[in-house]
Amino acid sequence: MSADEMRADEAKPGESVHRGDPVVVDRYTAGARINHWITAACLILLAISGMALFHPSLFGLTALFGGGQATRAIHPWIGVVLFFSFSGLFLRFWRLNLWKGADTTWLARLNKVLGNRDHEDPDLVEIGKYNAGQKMVFWGMTLLILTLIGSGLVIWDEYFASYTTITQKRLAVLLHAGAAVAIICIWIVHVYAAIWVRGTISAMTKGQVTGGWAWRHHRKWLRELVTGGPRPAE
Image (cartoon, rainbow, N blue to C red; front, side, top):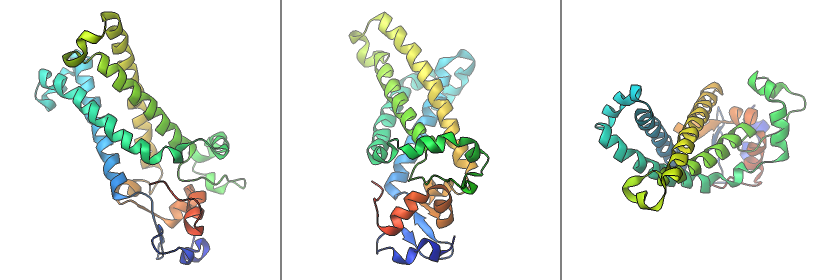
């Protein structure tokens, strides 16, 4: 796609489309990227420390955090940081992740997306800033982080031991472990998708994508930027 085709010259000053070869489109602000990477780092640290506490065969991972007691003390506090960090992402992006009719259509044609042939589809559905898969990751993360923080507080004996019963703690441990496994699976899918769709990583490292990438994967979003339609919330 050329600059003329996307009419980048019509963009007003301050808009997120920059003329050039290639055309460059701003996708994430520095604040959004910092917010994202803090959340990602917390998820990784929680996964490692959680696995270290989950099974004796993985206890050796506690050495990364200064030993077993230190890991037990640090793990819930990292969870608190994750909760507030993800809350920042949620406030930035929840409106853009509301489900639309086009998302259902996109999902029905997932085989073409996975085959990297979606852009050749004559009945192409134009997608906004996020596609259905990204929205499912977003809402899955939201639900699971709420589950993890809620169940985590129940089993955080240092501060909340007197507020819960043994039965509640046992149920919370089960819920916490199940949610942890689920969020690790979603995280793996999220990372794999970011690597698989070429050009996606630069969105979260540099904050920008090429005009061609935006046209191919998020055409409706690009049109809105160029024509001055609805703008991203962040």
